[in-house]
Structure formats: structure tokens, C-alpha cells
Length: 219
Image (tube, rainbow, N blue to C red; front, side):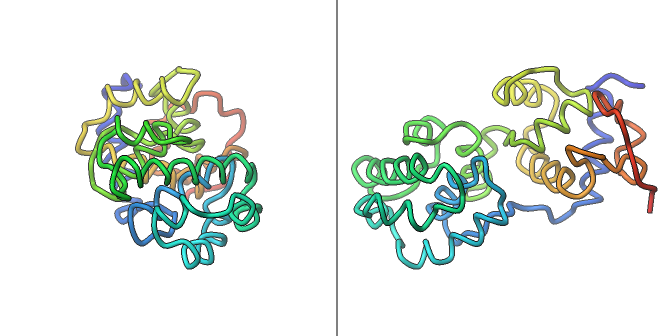
């Protein structure tokens, strides 16, 4: 089998054909909503977040609204996403900084986004890539982390270092779409348990690192 670098073009092409319209699964109408939704998605499914945010975004429509919100009210509205106390605290603090430092607008640089409480590289990459179309990095969530290892693209132990490895292999023009497509692939085919390897579009170029059992048939 080819090296990781040698297999990347085929992986990118196969995923592009399989998921031509892959996009962020978090429902949002603007950068602020995407920022909040991504913060809520930590240790929570996108489906659950999308159940919570409609009412949340009706009640709070601006950074000022979130900055001035009652901590208790925020906690109540986002409780089902888990870790709700810490999330509410970070959302409120991040929006307070948006108001005081960025005129209430979500900034467009990695450095500025990382200055917001509760925002790490994953969240910043989601906002920059999806809201602004800025390829500043590659989103490494649980799906990307898992599949990158199975594809033999990294051996890194942390999401940050997985991203470093992927940035060396994936052309910058593909950074945004590559993460979206891996996430979709992780939900539909390359699951944590019982990955459907026989019907996977990258089956032939995947070394299946760490996969103990593959089920299903190519359809």
C-alpha cells in the first residue's frame, strides 16, 4: 500500500464523490449562532444541539443578549447538552468579550477567536471555515480523530497534534471540505463500533489501523 502522502489524493477524490455537498451539521443563520452552537456541541451530539438552539436563538439574538443573560436562565435552556454550567459560563464570558473587544461581532482570525473564553482550535476552525470560508486549519472532532488514525494519516495522541499531521498532508484548498466529509463519513460508515468497511468508498486505500472487526457489504 502507498504511503500516507501517496494515498491522500485518492482519499480526497473518493470522499468528494461520495459527499459532494457535505457541510456543517449545526443549524445556524450567522457566525454568532455558529459559535454558540459549536461551543454547545462539546461532548454532545449535533442532533441534540439542533434541538436546543431554536429556542435559544429566539430568546438571545445578539452577543449583547448573551452577555447580559442570566447565568441560571442560560443553564436551564442548554441543560440537555451536558456540562451546562461550564458551557453557560463560557458562552456568557465569550459574548461579553465580543461586546467589549469586537463590537459585538465574531472575529475572523484564529488569534482573536482563541482569545474568547471556552474557544479552542476546533471551535475556531469551525467558525472560520463554515461562517467565513477561511481555511485556517482542519476541524478535528471525534470522527476526524478516529478516521485519520484508521486511514494511517497520523499516530498523534491529541486532536491538536492530529491537526498538525493532517495540515502537512491535505492541500489547504481542501481543509474545510475534508473535515466536513470525514465527519459525514464517520457518522454513516466509519463508526466507532462496527465500521462498515466493505461498503466504504476508501476501503481499498485504507490500512484500517486499529480496526478489529468490519461488517456490512458494499452496496
